Length: 115
Image 1 (cartoon, rainbow, N blue to C red):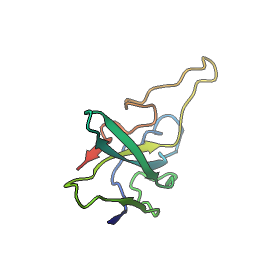
Image 2: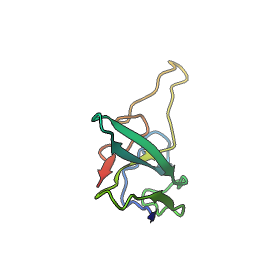
Image 3: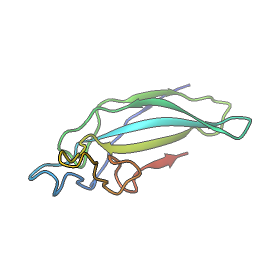
Image 4: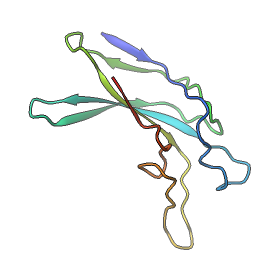
């Protein structure tokens, strides 16, 4: 069975605040299907990602994603990650500044696994 996913987010933290004067974050979503193999190892398949919504902390993504759901399985486990496409690098030191997420461009606490 094919399932179509539409994504939106509300009141995201502005990760660009203080980094670029007057700028707002430009988020996008990445969706990964996670399944467990018989040897108890997880495999991840990237379903897709949405477009970048520039300067928007409450985006409604227009690109929908389609995934195949096995009707014999009770659940399709998804990992939905919201990221900011802006990255900050220091030209003087050549280092990236961390913004508190697992990756430099993750929203803190918004990487979720949906069952």
